[in-house]
Image 1 (spheres, rainbow, N blue to C red):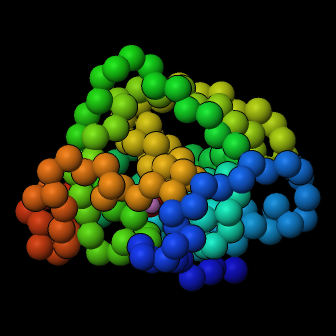
Image 2 (image 1 turned 45 degrees about the vertical axis):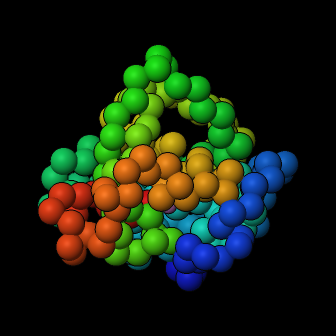
Length: 176
Ligand code: NI
């Protein structure tokens, strides 16, 4: 069941999320199911639990082929719980991002280019991946939500922030 996504300005988006302590419970599976429905119903690339008002360290992301976003690589649906991020190297790159909590806008955000991430799926199975590019960007964006950080807080030059309908670039990236 899709749920309303909280919008920037709601204080719940600024809170630190708590770790999940019990895996493979009906409640956790229902949360994952609701978040997946919500993300897909809005054509988002990712969603973090605090965005639907649940203060737990749970994010999910998925990119399927979409003609609106030709430059974005596909990412299989991933449920990532209690994530730990470790940049690989110091290299960062600027890229366009949008957020389901800030609909209709895009901004140019610096992120680590390569990243190792670890965590658990909803059954408690360990996840350990090394990724780059848009996949690394999505993970950093979603995990920022668990720290109460929204992407505009990371924009270096606010001239690169605006409505996607008005921006000359950045439209072709999904909201997360
Ligand atoms: Ni977001």
